[in-house]
Amino acid sequence: METEKDSFGKCPYTTAQKVLSGKWSILILYHLGIKTMRFGELQRQLPDLTQSTLTKQLRTLEENGLIERTIYPQIPPKVEYSLSDIGIKFKKVLAELAIWGNEYIETLKDKN
Image 1 (cartoon, rainbow, N blue to C red):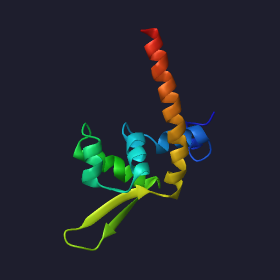
Image 2: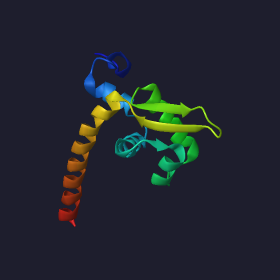
Image 3: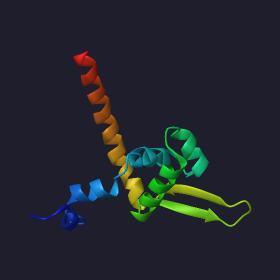
Image 4: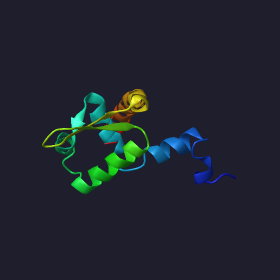
């Protein structure tokens, strides 16, 4: 039986789970799917997210190839985050998650 570590890059579910790990990764990808943003803009969109956690999540998403960080050579420095090519393909998954999430919300309402 393969361990999670052994199946990374082989099993699509293990790979997706590993790449999207982190409580905020899906929400960050959602916001960057709307438009390219600077750090402060992202932080305003996710006010419950601390600066250090946002930094960590952005680094992880960049290391995993889902987002790109562009540094502009100016003073003061300007840094923007956007979806990479593979990150743009994730927008389809986000759309399906929204559909499923809304259906789930309806089932919760039906229980009450």
